Image: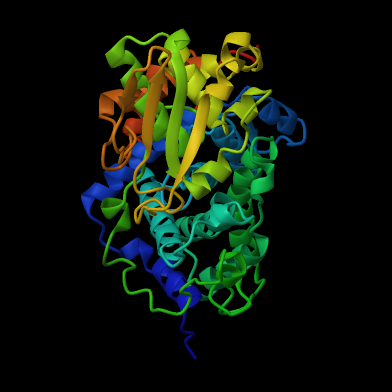
Length: 456
């Protein structure tokens, strides 16, 4: 007897993926996601959390891990890739979280183990994204208002769907894999600004592969593990207002990757501060404003944004990624927020810390329907010591948002900058291979291999 409900609908979607027609645009979007995510994985490969984690990963023979320049099991390669990709908080954003930093490492690892064609890998990414969007769209509230880390919680389900599609699981196996993902899901916001935040993303990528393998081996789970009153979606819903029961009619009909897209980050910090950074940089540049001329910067933003940007006086580069006060200070001082502005030494510089108290926040309650947890608009007002007032007006989208996307050239520039930061010698060659990852003749060992310097 066929099961009904969300878990079964997603399993059916996964099982029919190989024969499913997809618009060309979604494949192009998936390719951009791989380019951006592999770039940030390379940029993060020498971060302390990655270096520590490498010591616990045993040599394997399933997948080459760009984050550590060695072959591992596909689960460990996915784990390290997810951690490296999220360590700098520079990965893309959509639907409550960071889809690609869970999907891409899992698929990159499994693609090598399976020798899967590049086109199948891109299609599997689309399946994963659409799964993420389907379950994320059912939650009207911002997950960041409570404890659960949405990237980890939604990510393991979406990556399981993607890996199940790549492994050609049938409907029953896919349903059991999704049920396991619901139980494997974990991650709390309290660990933002620590090593554990990227570890949560990496474990979601690795857990997805484990769920698929266990389902293939015959482990079974509940048919309604996602939508049950005691299932995942009710369990993580901030106000238990999730719609877990409506039919999943949009799957494979509406392509949310085209409708909603991915927002690519220009700055390697929490996305909740990007609109404010854009506003500060634009106002200061237009007025030729020096930091010493600033009396106060007022940033209006949403409640969940303010709660996520939880470090008013950060002491480390990790904390600074979740500090509006630091990011405003760096934007005023340097006109950008990049790798150089996120070292521990920079964060503790007196000219940086001296600006922290000049930033104040105001809370807006106009919830954004496209970006859960964000206000509809952010706004920046800079008051100067001579009584002047500079006003950004309402800022709807950060540069790089899906509605204000980076050009291909800008995306390539980000990739090459990330590769340089990660010590990769031939970033341009790797970029070219990723751009053509689905063409005949490409092998995964060749696509992902990169020559890189050892950690400094």
